[in-house]
Image (cartoon, rainbow, N blue to C red):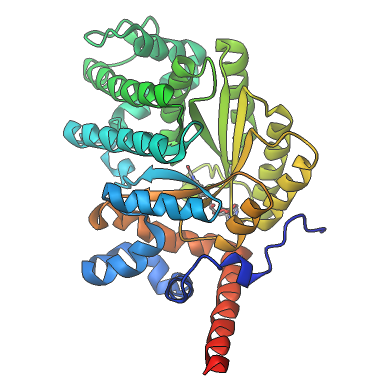
Length: 422
Ligand SMILES: Cc1cc2nc3c(=O)[nH]c(=O)nc-3n(C[C@H](O)[C@H](O)[C@H](O)COP(=O)(O)OP(=O)(O)OC[C@H]3O[C@@H](n4cnc5c(N)ncnc54)[C@H](O)[C@@H]3O)c2cc1C
């Protein structure tokens, strides 16, 4: 395949990294390739003292917790020609809370952490900044499941009900025509509080010119997440896509879902559409379900990803934005090729902080908009995220191996240069 952008030059790719950073990345990506570590990441990481975690795995994959640390990470990204996409980590095992309550104070605190990301993004990146949000961190999981059932059976009226609740500003009572008879009193109370949190974040983002990209999670939660995300989009996306949804192309029904949600927002509600396109991060959990919602094999996932990418690229415009969030070189080259000679301003690429630097740098230098997803949180808050990085690095197909090989080449040539200088 003809390469549109060269990802094979380690000295150009890692020129912004110190030798310590190159060596650290190499050691950590190697560690993630070891099965025992990838399988037991969280249990093992719990035993590592914070003084060791902080300068190593935490520094590799997390931007920081304090405002000053995050600003520094964002500025370093900017110096490398990249844009920062802050992501407040909140990786509680939400599914395990479906039967029981989750503390409202935790959900309120999460919403303030996301609002802080929106403010920081606006200050550091200006208009058009992107922020990632885990909506399950703002909503009781039991409510998400109830909303998911309601949305999958009734569709648009459920979205309109929630959107009206967001825009009307009446937070003391549920005034929803369709949902009123479906939700329990407890769910209605929880919904009012969830709508309050979503509204606070949406308004902050709308006023500051930021877009909020809602993460896709596991399938029992995704319909509920979509109902709230689409309601947020209906409330805030009239002039530009402020609230975007994420589509996991490892799911067999991803293409139907994208088409349905695009039509619902563009034609049903008449607002703008934003999409983050990913392959999907929860494969082990999803494979254990009956029926298995995931594509037959990796090739089927990739075919799905490329089909959906191609159809969304044709729709991209001031009213339809997309980010291809992937570390896969073939997928990226496909987008680059399709964008040749066309307006690129509504399409961007996304890679995770601490990973795929051999892709992000060259892409940005070739003139594309590249966002680095920068997780923020304390060491304790990000442990589950760090454990997921280990599993996910193993799930990465050729990408992680190529990255390790390029890092090793760069370490070797820096060591040789240092020896020759003596
Ligand atoms: C900026 C950013 C944001 C992200 N946000 C989200 C999010 O909101 N929700 C989410 O779920 N993920 C998210 N991810 C993670 C993403 O879904 C992928 O897990 C990760 O990027 C690896 O996929 P890839 O395309 O980069 O790499 P590749 O190495 O090409 O693909 C690996 C992926 O292929 C799929 N796969 C592997 N083997 C098989 C198989 N046998 N059968 C079927 N499929 C298979 C899996 O999805 C696996 O993760 C995000 C990633 C990035 C970069």
